[in-house]
Image (cartoon, rainbow, N blue to C red; front, side, top):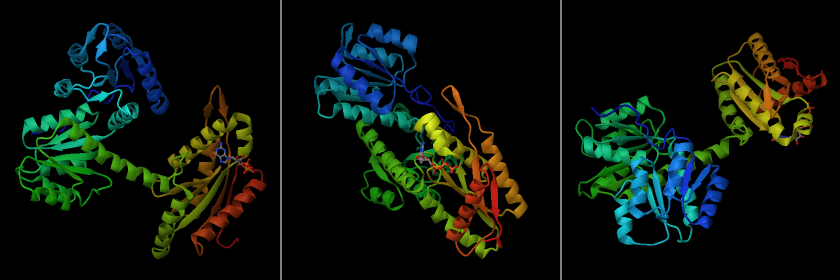
Length: 433
Ligand SMILES: Nc1nc2c(ncn2[C@@H]2O[C@H](COP(=O)(O)OP(=O)(O)OP(=O)(O)O)[C@@H](O)[C@H]2O)c(=O)[nH]1
């Protein structure tokens, strides 16, 4: 049976730190600055194999080695042998284009071979490192009935940083998908006993959409209709076997980046950038559904506005950065305090909104008083200091004519809470408007 365990790659789980081995000081500085500046990944520099050895000893393990091919104490194959023998994921940068050398090196287990004088080489390197770093948080599923093929694909994916699980046929593949919600990428063979790759793809698509899970079909069969069948049944892409390692990595990266792009576009549209909570737009979109649902099913629904007290003073005392830290801590506390069915959003500035279904009036009083007290007890470290915060909360009990009316009512009593001395909860009862 194919290994169910998640096999970790040498990239996954290793601290994001890079060893840059290069004798040109200028290139060292350029790459070091680009990687540290743009990605925030620490880069340790070495100019020879001996220095690289000392760095590995003293500061390893490294997520990646980027090495030139001409060093004072070694060149070309000796350098590659040195790092591969230590099982270090290796990217080669070289000043000379030599097709034979390139082919020879790419047949070894290096990640990439980059010409350093080519236009855009540093930008490509930054992209590559960012990709490898992000891959460490993604799990890939390999489905193939032939063990050697399965292992080959799995080891390629591991080399590029992915965590890998595997299955011997489509049926097992569906089971793995169910068990592991971190799977974002599937590479599946076509011809397999029990369930083919195309049938797997068709069934997987009933639960996992294209913008959440990327499925790539592979086959060595020389049948042109296979590609269309895979794509029509929901695959994102197709690769003919045998494929080159470069092609494999390019296709996989492109598909993963599409998923990330869609994900980040969705995040941009629905989330508040600073706190990760829902934004105002999403609150009204999702909130309207909850409002309609409560109406149809005659269920309770309360709305609340919560505002940090004297937030301007927090900014003035601790600076804007301190204010941001306080905002994130309060957002986090509300998100943790809320139940899964509640909707929590940041409306902007220091103002938050909640929509809470299915609470009786007394329960709602306890709930919002509990939340206020929870925030008052927060310990928010900022440098050597602690930032104290309190909040005022206005609650609109029960559904009104519209969601907008509920929010205005919550806002009205929030003002009363502020006027009444802050750090308190005020309730608007249905007949108190
Ligand atoms: N740090 C930080 N400050 C923000 C952000 N958005 C808005 N602010 C600041 O939040 C402050 C809001 O202050 P006010 O609306 O006067 O209210 P307050 O000081 O909280 O006083 P009360 O609400 O009356 O208790 C302003 O100084 C804004 O500049 C943000 O994202 N980060």
